[in-house]
Amino acid sequence: MSNLQNLARFFTLSNFDQAYKGALENSLVISPLLGIWQGLRDSLGKITVLKQGKIGGLLQWGSFALFVLLFAVLALPQFASDKEGLALISLASLILLCLGRLLGGGRARAVRASDMLVLGYFGANIVATFASHYLPESVKGLSKVAIYILSYFLFTASLQENDARQDAGLMRHKRLLMVLSAMLVSGLLVSLYGLYQYKIGVAPLATWEDPTVESSGTRIFSTLGNPNLLAGYLIPLAPIAFSLGLAVLSTSSKWKWPAGALSIGVAGIIAVATVLTGSRGGFLALGSMAAVFVVVALASLFTRKANAKFILPSFIGVILLAGAAALAVHFLAPSLEQRVLSIFDGTKHSSNAYRMYVWIASLKMFADNWWFGVGPGNTAFCLAYGLYMKSGFDALGTYCVPLEVGVECGIGGIAFFFALLANAMACGHVTFWRAGDRAGSLLALGLTVALVGLMVQGFVDTVFYRPQVHFIFWLVIAALIELHAEKKD
Image 1 (spheres, one colour):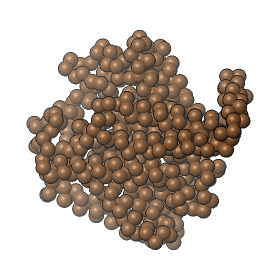
Image 2 (cartoon, one colour; image 1 turned 60 degrees about the vertical axis):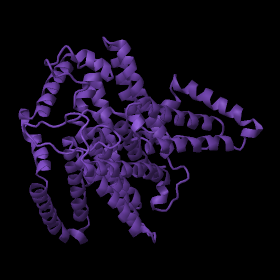
Image 3 (tube, helix red, strand yellow; image 1 turned 90 degrees about the vertical axis):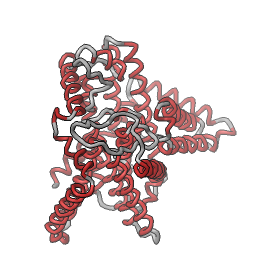
Image 4 (tube, helix red, strand yellow; image 1 turned 60 degrees about the horizontal axis):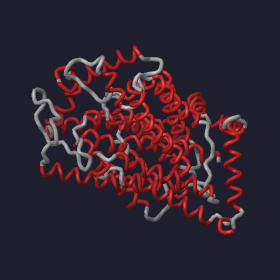
């Protein structure tokens, strides 16, 4: 266990924070820019009305309000098609944060070595853009990547608890708590509307099943118009709500039982709504997330020798519960069972066959463009994909996130993307096992499990790059990095 902990600590890169900060300060490019920024801030600070930093502080609070708003409105129906609106909210929040700092606001962003991985991934996309045969289309795709990279820096700056309390407890993470609460309230409303759709048997907006393999059933899509997109949006919310409930129960608040039960109940509603989307990637994600929770629970019992006697009964209980759930699905929801089993039907299921043809064509694209990729964005992808596609199997993406990254920005993009995932997972692992902040540990667990769910669905679906999913991905990455960094700061 100690070797695993040491390996995880290394991958958090926290030991390189100071070296990275020093490299930036001594950089021939960055150092003059930092000097100009600080000089401008000092000059503005001499203006009487700005001396106390109240205006800057108000602007930074406005920035945080927009940050929270972004995750409260992610699933509104107008943003299912108007993707630029969400980008504008994120950019407005970032501008207010920077302007507030310039005008004397006290919120400054700490430098993390993890930033190197994010910038490396962005750099791979820049290289892929200017190496692409489809430059105008790749520039458009690069602009989308830039929005998310800037959002990462906004999220990490906004989540840093500059005035965090030194005692353990949820209020030490009040900024993260506010964002997650807004997102979960929105997710609950979206889920309830989806359950209403299931009750009335809402008609599908498109043909989402193969009638030769499975019987037709109701698939909810709520406000997003697409069941797979709804699943991608809800998948990370379920473990976050569950872990938040556990974190509340770990506190000494007199309201912990009703509040904790409410949060766990929200997790259950969101999980049910995810199942009712009929998204097979969602099924795989839910199963993988449940497995991670079980493994972590058993590992926690194993490391606490006083509780070691509960390991075998707990394991048997999990097996029996899983068996009971499988029997319930078999006898009570045969259409759901057919949908789950269709995952293993191979090319007999038209959706499986479609994905396999897209994967084969995308692998050929990667083999021919593995150095720099074809360029970021689905427009550049579509232009290149036409040269490799099987007739009748057009696609907007590879239906596999690692393959998408490789096709768009080559081997360098894959390396930095997986390094970033490893870094975030390591931060979650170390934070969970760290003593002294049980609430923070449980939040880190939920966020880590959410990241697992996002990646599992991303391996077999194409909604990962939709704003409703991708903004949550970057929030999870930022939150894991900042939760780990809080103790050190």
